[in-house]
Every structure is written in structure tokens, then in C-alpha cells.
Length: 453
Image 1 (cartoon, rainbow, N blue to C red):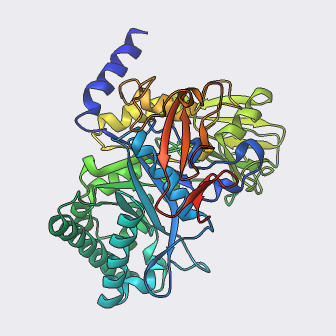
Image 2: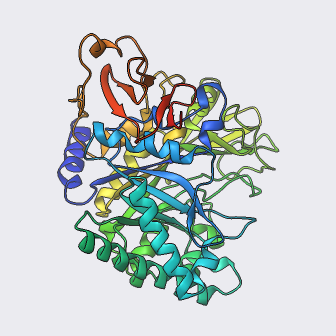
């Protein structure tokens, strides 16, 4: 117990100097999960993370940022309203993904004119929708047939974005937009895709995707996000681990304080093909898809909580991560213990903090794991030494009696104001907040959004 107290104290003392960011991603497709798996911005705890990144927007044929989902821009309003509750919260918008397997950035970076159009669009779009920054999701730019060209053009884009953000802040006398990126973790892709020493100075932080190291595409079981290599690893697989990935980024010139370690709130599954159940056991494809994420080979943490009571749980000492088996299902996942190990490693290596993929795959409602809402991310926050979250918060605009008690006994979320349709109430941990729709719009309870009358 004394060693635990010392570790937590060490994390707390160093967190303000190095591991100061807890960046959490949310996805716009999680709204389509059934029943208790459905996630929208209403489910966000505004005091949980230092930054929330909304994924995902794309780029249209005019090299301009474009929403993906029908209600993205309504969800932007709901996400960014949390900054009225927690003024320290920062929000960013992820742009990227693929269209028919090709990154939309391929066309953007090809010419100076297309880069300029994208950058102008990015500044306008982020300012219009009240985001604090842009997150680039172009993890594999070297996969498009011209790796060297892509690599250099990506550097140009990052450099030009950074300069434009500086000019926008200076010329308009406003806070500079943040710039970050999701980047690959495996050495061959890193070397093919990024001029690390040239792009790193321009980013506020860099999200290294330290997961998906192993999965059901392989013929034997392996862990999704191991801290270290296994004695069973051979060939290129000796580098399929966090220690190797972060070391490679550092060796190529990335400042440690800009690298954020990826913490997955999901696990990856295999279908065992023999009676062997250990790490490296023969496998063929994934276990059954989870009932909420509905993706073969991939379970959210809240789905994992339903699996564990009937499973046999084992710890991999050399990789500091757990796995679980039941019948022919094999699962490599993360828990509080593995998160603690990774935080200690992250702190010892003076990284800038953590990023979580994703908010919507933790037990965000506290329904499944009997450990409260966001058990993994709350544990991560505690392990990183962040101060306790406030139990009550002053409302930026509070309601008057008798409406001050409108949230008493209600779950967190957004509610209509019958007295004034141009406003709506936000309930959070028992407190009531009054928000105003944009001019000309009214609040619709059917979509929990502001829209035209």
C-alpha cells in the first residue's frame, strides 16, 4: 500500500510538468449503437478530460471540411456547450478518415492551391462551430503509391496550417487554434509516412495510436496494446508494443512532452482452434461480435464487463496486460491494473500525457461494470494525478426559482424549457444550466438540438 501511495504521489507531482493532458476521443457513429450502447455528447462528463476530440469530419471535392453525419453540426453545439460548464475544457475536431479506402488528404496536399483552400476552410469551420483546434487523422499517408511525395506534402500541410493558425490568432486578436494529429505506431509506417523532426515542432500534441498491435487477422493470439514485447514475439512482431513505438518516435526527433500515449477502452478477440488458451495460441478469425459495437473481433470495455464474470482471467507479466478466455473466445484487453502500469511508464518517460480511444467505449453510463460511470478513464485520471473533479459547479447562467430544481431526480442530459423555446436546460450531476439557441433557432426535444422552427 505504501508503494502505491508513493507511485500516485510521484504521478501527481510530475503530471503538472509533463503528463498534463488527458485527451479523450468521441465518435459520431456511436450514436447508432442500440439501447445502452448509444452515445451522444449528452453522455460526456465535462470534467473528466482536459480535451475532447470529436471524430469525424471529412473533406469535400472543393477541399473544404464537410460533416459526415446528418446531425454532426447539431452535436457540435451540444459538445461545445460543455465549455460553459467547464471553461477549461478544450475541444478539437478530427478531420480525415477514408473515402473508398483513400484518404481525402491525398487530393488536399497535392497542390499549394488545394492546401490553401483547405486551410482557409479549416479556420472558418472551427471558428464557426466553436472548436479550439484541429486534429488530423491521416495515419497512413504513405499508402497511396507515392510515399516520398506524400511524406513531404504532409510536412508542407502541417507547416502551412501552423503558420495560418498563428496569423489568424494575431490578425484577429483571438486565442490560437490548437493543432494535433493521430499518428501511426509501427516503425515501417512511421518512416514511410512522416518527417518526424520537421512536423513535431508544429503540433501542440501528437496522439500515437498505441493499440491494434494484434488482432483476429493473425493466426495466433496476441494482445491489442501490450506495454512491452513478449518472449514469443519474433521478426517484426518484436516491435508491436508501446515501448518500441514510443522509442521510435523519440529516436526520430519527436519531443517527449508532445507525445500522448494511447489508452484503448476496447479489446480485440480471437476464435481459438485448439485447447490451448495462452498467449500465442492457435486461432482462426474473431470471436462473435459484441451486441452493442457489433464489430467482429472488437469489444468495448462495457461489453468486456459482461464477458469477464464467466471467463478465466490471466495476466501477462512481461507485457503488463490481461487477457481472458471462455470456451473458444480469447480476449486481449486493458483494465485498471494495466492502465496504472502504462501511466507509470508514461511518467517515467516524461510524455505529455494520454489520449483515450474512446469515451463511448468505456462504461460511460455505469450500467455494465458496477464501478460507476467511466471506470477506466476515471481511474486513468486518478493515476495521472489530476485533482478531484468538482462535485458542484457554478452555472454560467442559472435558472430562477421554481425552475432551479428542474434537474432534481432527472438523469444528465438536455431538456426543453416550456417557458421559452429559444432556450433549453442542461442537467449535470444535479445542477441546472440554462443555454440559449443561436438566433432564429428553437430547441426540439425530439433531437435534443436547436433547429429551425
